[in-house]
Image 1 (tube, rainbow, N blue to C red):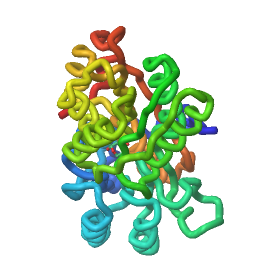
Image 2: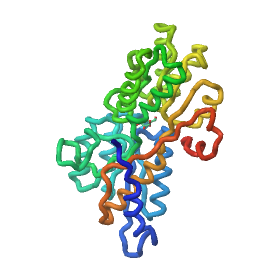
Image 3: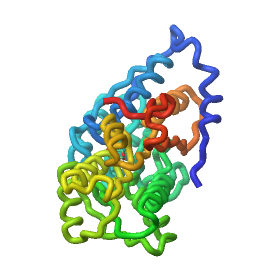
Image 4: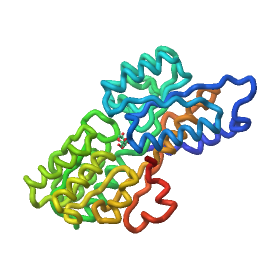
Length: 324
Ligand code: T6T
């Protein structure tokens, strides 16, 4: 099970929080490479990272690709390695394809921490496998998130009928695990049929037209799980365009600002908000702790906030809606 180790890192951080940077101490540069730059999830992660960087007197460099794709992310990573930052935080866009490019950073002596997504199995510093070299993985528990989504969708469809997962593409640790958790939980619901997953390449328009095609083939479709922001947004738009609002239930992973309207209008039943600012914050704190000689946990699990009609106006809940 996922280990929550925030207390340990908070204790580790407390001794060097004041003053932020001693006169004679080197100013560290920490790079954050998101999955893509134009995604509210990573924009919010950057804000959390910046908050920690400001508190610790660290320079934060945010550099990423315009789409979620190893082909565009690897050149960004190479450029970041060439700038020789003191540490790299990265959301690898593929479990396998980022292993060798990240090994180059590690071989160059740059500590690597993965945030949101992982490489290999995501179990680091074990001495086994070819991808255990990152120091830490900081993220949501994505299998659990998929299970929460499945339970919510099952409830809203009265535990019976056809559903499917709108997903990005295979090979991404987060969205693969959400689908895994979703299917694992749905196995406990014998009257629910999970149709083939539809892969949209992180393109909401594609996800919307896929919804309409699946509905055309299955007029008895009752639900869809959008496994990330663009999958959910697209699937919800598809439901609206098909005139099925409230009839085809939508459970969304991620919480961009548009989710509020969608929940209020009944288009989306429930959104599972991750805590990306927390991921960014602890990413920077962990890198800093390592750079100043502290040991750090290999795994830090951050939380979820489940948003629905009953709590969407509560400020303690609404604060987890992502920044634009
Ligand atoms: O769901 C997040 C992130 O966790 C995932 O790895 C990729 O998609 C998002 O960035 C949302 O678009």
